Amino acid sequence: MFLWVHYADMVIALVQLPVAVVAWWAATGRPSRTSAVAFAMLLGAAVLRLAAGLVLLRWGWEFAGLRLVWVAPALLAAATAHLVWLRPTGRPGRAGAVAGAAGIVSVAAMAQLAGVGAAAVTGVAIVAASAMTYAYRRLPRRPVPAGAGRWRAAVRAAVGVVAVTAATLGLSMASALPARSSMSGGAMDDGGGAVAGHQHSGGISVTELTGADGGDAAVRRFTLTAQAATVRLDSGAQVAAWTFNGVAPGPQLVVRQGDLVEVTLVNRLPGVGVTVHWHGVDVPNAMDGVAGVTQDAVAPGATFVYRFRASRASTYWYHSHEMASVQVRRGLFGALVVLPRDAPAQQDAVDETVLRHTWGDEDGVATLGLAAGAQRRSVPAGRPVRLRLVNSDGKPATFTVTGAPVRVVAIDGTDVHEPGVLPGVRILVGGGARYDVEFTMPDAPVTLRADGPGIVYSPRGDAGPGRAAAEPALLDPARYGTPTATPFAAGSHFDRRFVLRIDERIGFYDGRPAVRYTLNDASFPDVPMLMVTDGDLVEVAYVNRSGQHHPMHLHGHHMLVLSRDGRATTGSPWWVDTLDIAPGETFRVAFRADNPGLWMDHCHDLEHAANGMILHLGYTGVTSPFLTGPGTANHPE
Ligand code: C2O
Ligand code: CU
Image 1 (cartoon, protein in one colour):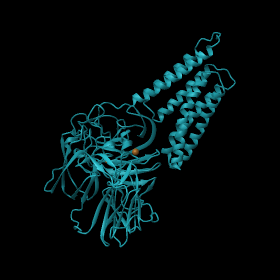
Image 2 (cartoon, rainbow, N blue to C red; image 1 turned 30 degrees about the vertical axis):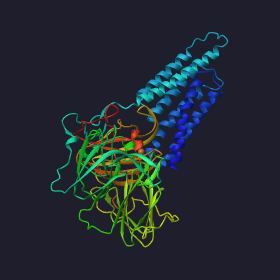
Image 3 (cartoon, rainbow, N blue to C red; image 1 turned 180 degrees about the vertical axis):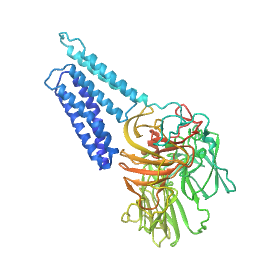
Image 4 (cartoon, rainbow, N blue to C red; image 1 turned 90 degrees about the vertical axis):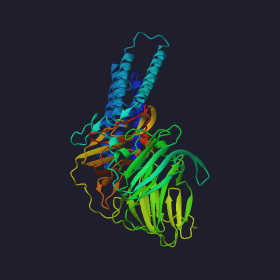
């Protein structure tokens, strides 16, 4: 229902623009049936958008407000002005020109309100359009020789074409990214707390935020070499991949809780930089691996050493954070598993990480690892099995496990408190998220399906995918498991509260046409940075007013989900680092600002991020010497 209203409203908004142009055209000429129809359509659009606003009230004022307060009334006013001043039988006059200009002004104002293009460009367009209208009306009115009507029509057409072209070019140019931008500058949002402010000199550089030294922790060393390689899918198809160590997905790194992990990144890719980001691990800021924010992209031939402590046992993954939308897709990612410190090694336990990845492009081949088909595994009855489900794509994927009673034991690197036994489970795993599932192998097949590819576990390893069993119920993490104490809760006093409204716009990003998902009406690097001070308790509301899922990923922190659509969570504390937000959903989350640095907060649908769906969380007094932008070697998105 939400999607229906959302897209219907969007279509009306899109139709509005050409209709307004026609209305302007008609207003500057002789009243005609065209002008009457155009005005009627403007009026109709106003009524429909008003209706859409009323329906959307069901999702809350955040969804309906813009339409009710601005869009529909503005349109209604413009259409009424036209109708009153330009009766279809009347004569064209200055009033017509004024009405035409009023129409353009209101449309431009709406476009601006809707976040289409920079205010400056819109302003120029308004002035230019009004001036042209006025000039046209002043054309000499001496007796017209035969043929002059055509001449006038040609002038009007030319003016229209020039205006539309200029506006389009202007919007495109205004969207160009600055050649260099620094995360130590730009607009800020204090979230209602004390003014934090950027520090331009002095302060602490992100490069100093390397964490405490290892002490006596065991050091686990790995080398990840980024290199091109051809990998083969189970279908036989070859993929020209970018890999770590020649394999895709990259090697699985397994460490014990408490270990000091030291990873040397070596770049042997031809002509492109690379980094490694430890997705879901709350590393010290200098180790976060974001090109242009916490380090420079590692150039071909160069190396970089990451060092951090694996303090929480769970499932994580790692991936490049330079040109991430391209590099992750091409294979620069892998799993990181942190085993519990003192859990007895269960010799016979099966522990498998299942990485779902789509090769090629968004509509490419979906696989588990490199297998698009159904894989078979042999697991003797009675064995404990843990499946670590990871979605490395941006779009959510549905995983189902059937054939044995299961428990969902961890989400995004945090154990679920008292996970109940389910007869089978269906989980919507958002982009970048992880869910760990456990079961005891029965004397019959257990099937894992992941929207296409799958794995069948059976005692002899010979069972194929049988007929799909009845779909198990969808897991609702807001109501699964039982509550337990948390360091803060919905009723806590928050030092700062932020609201992030997500919208869908058709426009330009970095000079090219793009569907943009904006955060508070802006795109990277213009989204105000969320400013905090070390120790703050922070609440963030994510309001998804767009028609797409957005897996919002905050680096360096775990967020406790407080409520969804106004309803408090009732199950186990639900901690996330990547929260999938469906169209129409509103989430409230909270976190303790206890890891100083400059941290990305972005959509993990990396195509969305590449179109500007990125902002940052900044701590007072922290600066970065690194720069991003087309004029640098750093492109974190
Ligand atoms: Cu998994 Cu900012 O990324
Ligand atoms: Cu998104």
